[in-house]
Length: 143
Image (cartoon, rainbow, N blue to C red; front, side):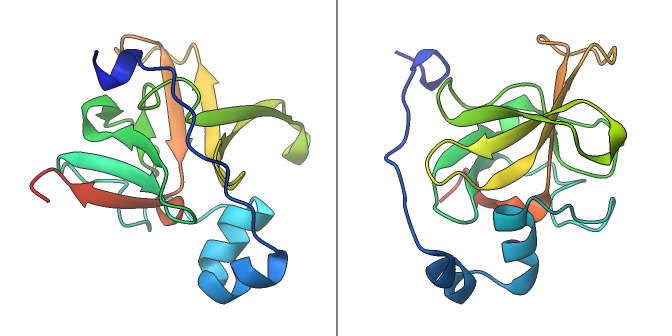
């Protein structure tokens, strides 16, 4: 069975706010735990083409792979799908005067970014998971 077809949800990670603050940098904490956003074109992975698996920076859950990553030229890493169903969860986000769908890690509930549909990118899903680099850790395919 391929990873893509597995409907696996990673184990739940629960930590206190104090624990998250100790383990994450201030920028990581702001984005992952306070739903902040890094500035476009500044993150480590927005223009990366390295093969591998992208894990949640907070808890290490595998979320996306380089196979689903594409160049959207939006300034953040973009994926057309998560690694598998159940790896991320979705919340309605009405902040900033617009309706968006927030993407969170299913294991630790950390903010990852947002997902958009119908933008016309030539991807199999017509979706763009716009994810903050600071929310991710890339494990290269050769490791």
